[in-house]
Length: 374
Figure 1 (cartoon, one colour):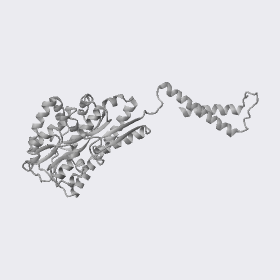
Figure 2 (tube, rainbow, N blue to C red):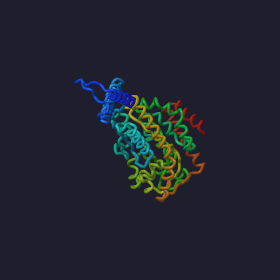
Figure 3 (cartoon, one colour):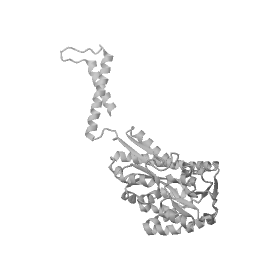
Figure 4 (cartoon, one colour):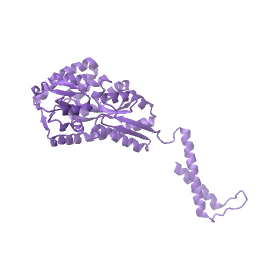
């Protein structure tokens, strides 16, 4: 529109100069003398008029065509080579590019802004803007996420991803907002696995092993039901615990095993596939709601693309992480179907706990979604 206005103005000025007109002193301006200069002046004048008109139009509509400036902080407890970091980094890049540099995100990995509990609480409270962890991290703040702590739910990764892209996600929005967050998206890092300095081929091999678990009642109950000695510990303390021998093993996805160099202090990775490592990506709810409509739309757009990018990296990354473990001398143990069935049977105690604490409705919704995704 601005270009069109400039072209019209240029045409009018040139047309007038071609015919000649009277100046204030009554003299006549020649149509041939200084023609190039006259045309350049006309174009400059037209551009200035178009700029002024555009500014007036912007004032009238209440917008200048630019985004407001925002500088946000994102926290995570995991390292820079994780799916979490790739996702948030992509989100930050897209926001920066599409806002013309007016919306930026500073990313703090590796627990720089506190452990998982601390930074999650800070996002809910509003002192940190964005967080990324896993569903289990949210259970203390949004109890409904306990449904994903029921072990051995999913037959495979494809089934889990189908559920995460279905209607169950929308059902969680109400719980998210009541809990103080806006969920921007989900990704995953496959399943959580057991690592240990002792080989595990059957349940009897787990008896008495001190296994680090998240500070989560359902995880504690599961590993105790398997006969291990569940040892709650913050993620940032795990490597030292393994190195010093205060724990025998821990459980994490391959992403975090390698991201925290646990392959250097563990001899075995046992593929228990017990919990889907579902990655969360969320923003403070009040901040999200306070954003102008166009900014919210941009945030949603960039988050969706960043989540899709992270999902595309997941399988490739898991294969690379497994190779890193093997190259470091770790033996990967795949459990047979009989033992996997025993793991699921022992998990029933957790299913009962989750039903008691969250109610049947959401549990049944999840189980139905899993059944449909088979």
